[in-house]
Image (cartoon, rainbow over all chains, first blue to last red; front, top):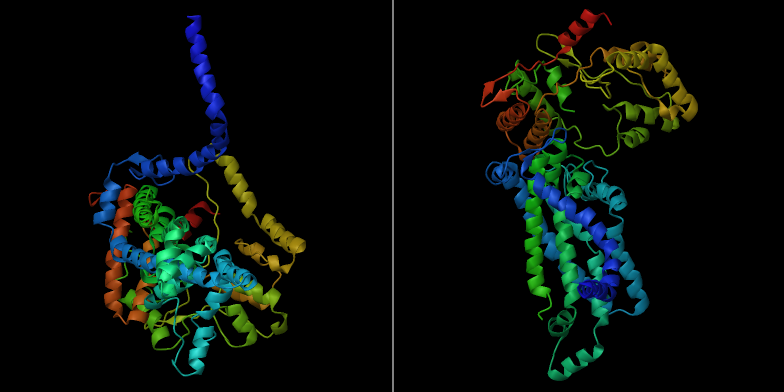
Length: 308
Length: 261
């Protein structure tokens, strides 16, 4: 009996000695992750099966929220889903491509101009709040004092000021432009680092093997060598694109945007959650958003993930 | 922002029982048509980026705005001090000669929950807070401590007389106060404001006929009101379970008359 207990204790002790430190190190991060990410996601999934008006206790109603979302919510089907997909398809891959091209071009420059230009290109993603009110709202302002309007009026392109931010046909393109401008973020920096890291001997070997122009160089050497950075950039682009929502409201000044022209899925969630006090339904929409982002991240993984 | 147009044409916002919108009436349609035509035919500027700035520089001579702009113009536009004035909200002259100049203007309210276990103390507190001396005190302390930029106007009519603004401004504000009306809030009413703005947008930008745009909005608003009424238990499977009381100006005067306060 004494032998058994000694054996058991020493197995546990062995385990502790080997891996205890590792677990102790990640316990801090794991705790934060569980509290701030896993628990809210689980709560959102749970809430999506209930009717919750933020004041009374939620009542369980099963899949009714999802059924309503897919069959009865015409704002979602007519405006939100098309807007989100249009926005995501143009800003996501478009912004990603733009980041890659700019990172590649910057990598060709010597050190000092490269650093300065990288800072210039990165700063819009950090200053979007201030830049928004000072720069964009003045350019696209709807009265005759807005920069774009007064320029076009002076040159007689138009007779009266165009309401860039209130008219449904212009709001979406402007949202896309402004988001593309501020999308050179962390992904861009990661790709720049990735390109700079590539061993120059690979290019020489490629030249020996018959690579004739720079475009082939990019496809055959640069991109395959920086797979991890491309994956990181892609995931960041996808997540931030689907999370964009405040831009429509800030630009047009109205929540929801006029005629739902700038309504993205995040605005729709906020509408149901904070304006209509239907938290269960908002939770259901957010679960759908989570699934969409997961699917697109899977696609990115299959394109760029490591094959071993 | 769209509510004064409807009030001033004599249109009701909701039906008598409060379960439907009343935007289909002739007066409402006239109001909506006027709202859109001021921009499309009469050329009112659709956006003013910063009225306070434009007013100071003289590019916009006249405008309709709120108390915040007033405080800005009083405190932060010294170069035009004394050169400008305020007046009543523009009146709409109806075909039967009535001149209506209703405008919205409420900001805050105090409420006491029905389930409170201290009803008497709460009532005493509310009476004390809204009493004239307390309101005058608070109004003047703010300005004494922090300067004229912290101008705060009391809802107490008597305390308002002590506000340190020019006499003729005070008179105009008191006169306009008689024309204060707020849109009724009932379950689903946020949809009305939203759909009115959407309808205006459709008429001005997409050249949709006002009647067509309003009809589409009416369907959406009614659906939302029904949804919310069901959620709150006023409707069940389309049958009315409880009456919904819509307060109007007469109701409020009734309450005040009854309690004598």
